[in-house]
Image (cartoon, rainbow, N blue to C red; front, side, top):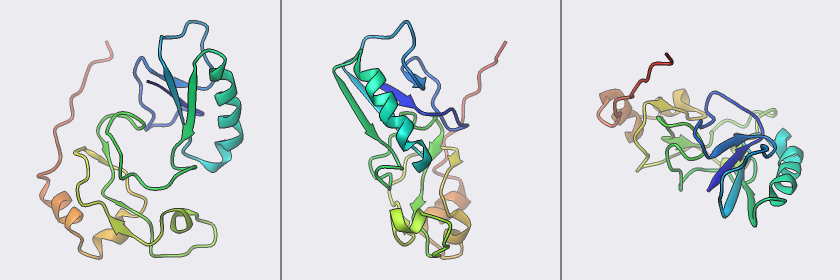
Length: 153
């Protein structure tokens, strides 16, 4: 499966089947292309990308947080880089400029979150004040797997 992202961020996976933007001249073989859209302002670009990739691949699907909130089916390293995990979603505040509560509802804990060493929750500080079990795991450090580092040389 090829994964396409409208823009490069610090959390974008970097492997042979992840691409930023439009199809390259030399493309890998695949049956399915997933376009993952994190930000709502990238939705028009996602539609353009879907059309461009559909010229070369039989099945192109658009998804991601901008389309579907939550991460219950989150798999580390597929749509965000390896090492990233989520322990909670949502927010108890209702700030007029933020869409987190509208998309994900009130703050809730992901009980069986994936191992990782980068916790990428929207509202981790708010959640720690509630005394959730994810934060107890986080404080004890027992769920965190050791990162592996490779030299760029």
